[in-house]
Length: 275
Image (tube, rainbow, N blue to C red; front, top):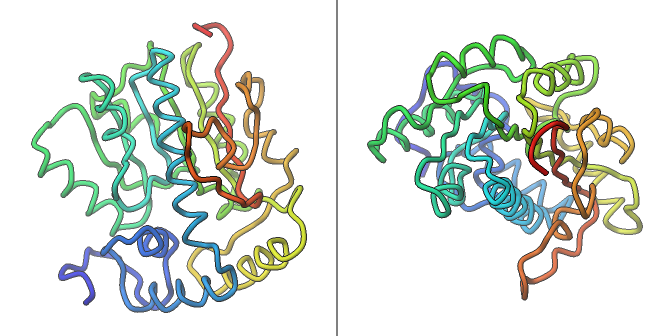
């Protein structure tokens, strides 16, 4: 069954990254064209669903790390369609006053995000923006206009599993640089990204097939080297264990390993604040 609502501007002629990711995580905010693409993606990269889950788990661990460092405000770029383990849900398990602004340019993601927050009935602490993350100053202005975020306090900026759908020619590097500049000292930046660096054998062949297949979607993927990914952190201090496969970033004790190297993640801190 397809979802029983259709937000304005939804493109059903091509599969959409946010809706495919929702499908991979077992969500229901996707259409037949997204599920068809997802099945083909799994054929090209059999561990695609496991990697999606590993990436989602990395997001949760990174958020918990930031909360432990005293950061309770979040700006989630390319947040996707809400599913279990949203940023604000993870944070609220630890603190009562966390705040989050979600940003996405996919109408389904935005519509579902607003429905979720309306159902939770806690206006003022969280918000969802329909915007393009590459418009850094516009996004920043709109995020502050919600009244959710205090720009004078540290904020955790997140771009999890999204930048590999934005080639450099789109201005994404300049946008992330601008966000870093706008953040208060002591803020954090959480990033995960696809790469071929350090990937070998069958996994390398699979990720290349997946990148090729993505050319049929609304957001073709790009694979950056580890050095190119590290450059997104600018002068931020990347915390231990560095930029590593997402399953290796501070795994929970006893957690099953995620034996994949093709998506890496890391967390950086802006100098001048609490370490």
